[in-house]
Image (cartoon, rainbow, N blue to C red):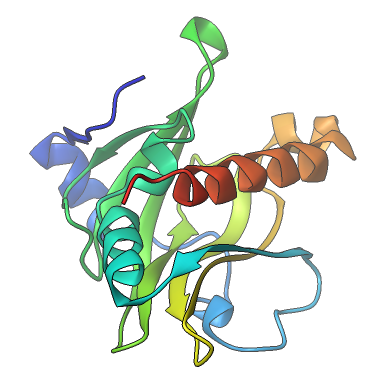
Length: 184
């Protein structure tokens, strides 16, 4: 499984840089409550303890390793992640591969919290936002938190009905395992 990103073509970057998001509540994963009218997800896992572990996990999150180590291909404008970065993530194999354009809506760069959120652009099978944040908590634990709100954004995901949220839950589990399994 590839653990590095590829560069998006400049024309794709420019086309997506100013594309509208497919939802109105941009940045809403940063605060509670998540917006109504969407399926919500909040999952977290303790991934270790101490400042060194926090730094390692934060570096991985900001280098697209959550997605890459989960078997998701990432073509992006920026690695490491910056506010406004464009990414086309892809999951699946061959003709069953789903491509999902996203743009980073915010970056968290605090002493004890690091991460980002991306939002969906036209062509993404879902409509909504997902955040990936590593926290170094007061008890010295390091916790990886995934928060999301989404609803079907395409005919395919609408037709999938209740399978869509199940698939998202499974992918979020892969995200958690990807960070928990990072070597020190």
